[in-house]
Image (cartoon, rainbow, N blue to C red; front, top):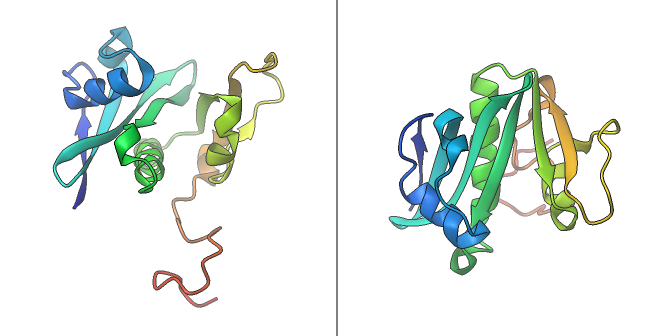
Length: 154
């Protein structure tokens, strides 16, 4: 069974920081005091985490990661959608993130686009933006699996 658990700003993010430590090499930090952290479990085992916070007039997503042994199960996608749901729940006008160039496709699938006004060098993270009104949590919308039982008829 897959489950998600939220940790409010200022609370100990618990195992979410543990996932962050294993994936990114750092655990708890000062940003936790102002972030909503989400932890995704697969069969009661911590598997993925991410966080969202308010900064400079926009909601920011960051540190979305899946433990190596748990990859390939769409848990990163679920974590990302949970964070977008939290932004939508807070009536976000804009959602931003800094994406490593090698994972831009992951974020563009749900509408994020490079911010044309943010400079970045080759190999540097790309600042991406999604207007809040364009948040779309429909996981089937861009899927090419025609025979999927979740697909609704057009």
